[in-house]
Length: 564
Image (cartoon, rainbow, N blue to C red; front, side, top):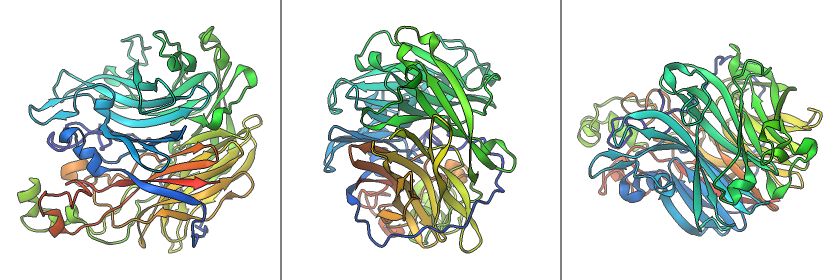
């Protein structure tokens, strides 16, 4: 494995083996259209917001028995007057005014495991990554999901077994008790899993995400070989919602293997829809819809097709689970393309980068040789995988990142959006949201039951520090003007992209999050909330800049409420 999603580095501040949300993208040649969205001069819809979890919270939770992790990934859900935010690898719960009620608590503790790294004796706990969450209005339960990688004992070596941990609240109050279910996903014939013949014996259930209809919770993964090479198709798990919500000891699970050659569609990041306010598709005995894209499979990196998946007869999940049925059909859309370049960012103070450049600083303080990296460093944009999907007002709503042409003729990233009739496959709205002078990346959308939504994303460019942005979203107009929920305070300055630390890819997120609660949309985007100089970085306590960052990173998140 290579990259750096959960653990990477030297086993001290960083973990021993990297885990990445892998892309299978081939092409980087596509161009969509010129950025032409407007920047709004004010944000009248913004009800308020607060800074959520950040790198310092991640690194110093559980008495510092944590690794440095980049990117954070974003799991956000809201309901019943609460907001739950989880990132790699911490969680916090807030009330609707932004007061923190729980946390930051590390995910190893939340799921009942030993610390990620016990710094007093060097023992390792399981490696946790890719958090997602969902509040289900019909059962009044919270569902929190992560991918957990087992170790060999308390050593750093990974065992190969891996599972989705599904935490379910006892009531509608997420600050109360939870129970945790484990779903093995190594799919090599052990622990009741099917054998998908992954290279070197173990599959990896990467990039899990959650959706739901009236009867089932749906979890999807991208299945790769854990220790070897190869992509084996997205996996779709349907799980009895009733059994989970009642904390039943017996829970029915149905697995659809997207890598089955009989399925007439490429299955990569098949994202299940969430439904706000208990609004579900009732046709065909209950139906869950999912969306995926396919540009990553083409050498050109360009496509005009997305894929509409449906799991029907979900009402039988408790009585006759074998009768659930999967179907898939193509939907013709505006051309989109895998973004072709990294994102430039506005210059500013980057003390980690500067420490590597100043003679003696990196060897004396960080334990690595000096090396001069360009400033400002570029950060990664997403590929064109499908992002968060919603079922609301009888429609399917989704986004993905796409290549766009910026005003100076360079390539950048924008957001393709879709509003789909799931019965016919027709389009109510489809277009590209982009700016001529900045990248919009890691878009995610949420929609109220009445069909009014918000797309959240990061805004970053030569004139913009990484900032938390959003735009309105509906089936008639499509996407509206670009607003800033919070402007970045400085440039990204993280360890990924530095070969000594996090490989050669400068990571920025894997996904964002948005959640509808009544007529309010809660959004969370990665941004940079702080800035400090090298002198401040080297002032005791070292590397923390007054508790605003860690030695190896400075990402933050912004949680905002948008009234509709």
